[in-house]
Length: 121
Image (tube, rainbow, N blue to C red; front, side, top):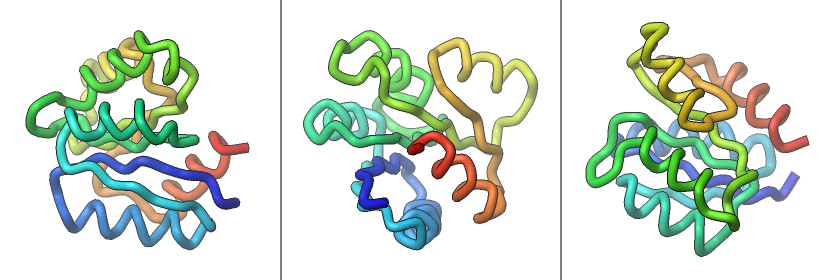
């Protein structure tokens, strides 16, 4: 597949877990540990997809998604939000910000891989 995917999460275990699943798909991975770093890497490296945690320092995932949608360079970048917050209102807020998907933590590795593969096609 060899597509570059950005993973943004402030939890090292989640970064490692998601990285392993993406490497199994044949993706190249870059990681950010806060929202500001995620936004900067997305604008600089232009990944094919971004997986962004909703709750992060500096900028949360909702704000990062909004800013990605506002920037011409990243307007069409597919974004999947990751979050333990799965109330209907939380999911709606993420989708309204422009996310292409919302994946509840904890998630099954197979579901993550299927969603990523579908958006990268």
